[in-house]
Image 1 (cartoon, rainbow, N blue to C red):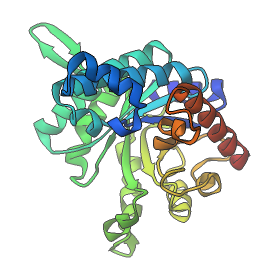
Image 2: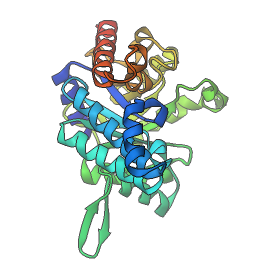
Image 3: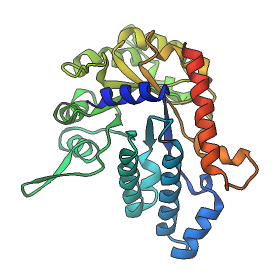
Length: 305
């Protein structure tokens, strides 16, 4: 089961964090970019090659201490078809290294379109008599704005293939309150979304005690974390906003349950760009990423004990 696998990885590595792999070219050491441009010219192919080399190297540096990666699809779409190939290769390589993969896609629509998104990232494409996996992530992020019509196709894949989803509930960005904190019949909208989880997660509990329907809850809103956790104690939280967005380890404590589980905290630029703080022009980018991942792990584990 997808969430069961995540919990096992977190316990094994004593690390409730996920590394976001959201690389732009300026996040990649210049020597990698230069090598790829020399080979392929100033092309999208060169950019994709640089991103893939960077991602593979980061996975090599992190896989034994970090349980999961979270590639954000937008950065791969930015590079066209070659970027889609890099996303697939990144997911496959992370799986080879025993890592859990959250595809950060924040997709949704209704009917057949939502089914296509769900099948692409969690399921299979049927060609003749064969069902062929596409991206084959363990889980993905989903936007709930269209209601149950847009959620159900993803739940279908969760049931059929033991996958998981993380539904946007209270996001970390400053303007999230424009809608998410609006009153909806006496309660904020984010509370109303959380109240739907009992319905959406029906039949999707795992032996870990957590459900395959999780929630995206920002580290930058600790009071909202507490409220949401009280409504959905069995939902795993994906927690963005730590580090570059300003949240600290103390800010994410409310996302966790008393067992020290229940949340996985993301850092993207903090890990990817750690090399920019060492003064070595990226020559030590793998070592710098690993050191930052260990620092983050220790910071968060000490805050939730």
